[in-house]
Image (tube, rainbow over all chains, first blue to last red; front, side, top):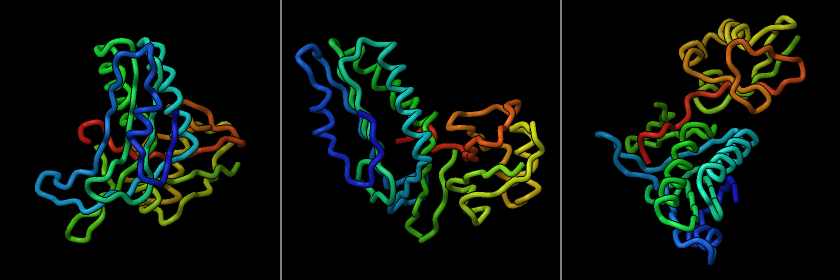
Length: 135
Length: 84
């Protein structure tokens, strides 16, 4: 399952979707909008995607994860638009027969997602300023 | 040839447009495109050295030749892996 959405992420449903009797381990990562960065306070984030390329890159990451680990299923959802502090911006769920593989596969998927998928976030700071985040 | 370059995030804000039409010589490369982008829209210059270029939804190195039918986009650095 790969999806970009403007709706709140149903992470319980996403986690349920990757479960299977063959997989003794399910790991779900939830990226959540954090309130404090250094000395600055965030009130919301705005996420923007290059949609077609983002979905293509997500599909490549899914294929890569399936090749490296004995994955039952993988699900990746990224939310777009304005997201308030405390809300979930991205969810990755992975099932594997054993937990070491499930943790490693989920970690790899979210790390690659952050590195390769063309999705940008704009900080809305508490003082009213906005700023595109960049490494 | 005219190449339409889609702009995202900070690139779009700097240019004030969500796409730019760039006049690129036939057989021009991504490196040529970067140079022409800076000439056409100087506001983009601070970002150009750090931004990636995508051709047909794939990251494209400076040596890649841009074909007339290509879908081209300028991609500022993405959110990064250090947080969240």
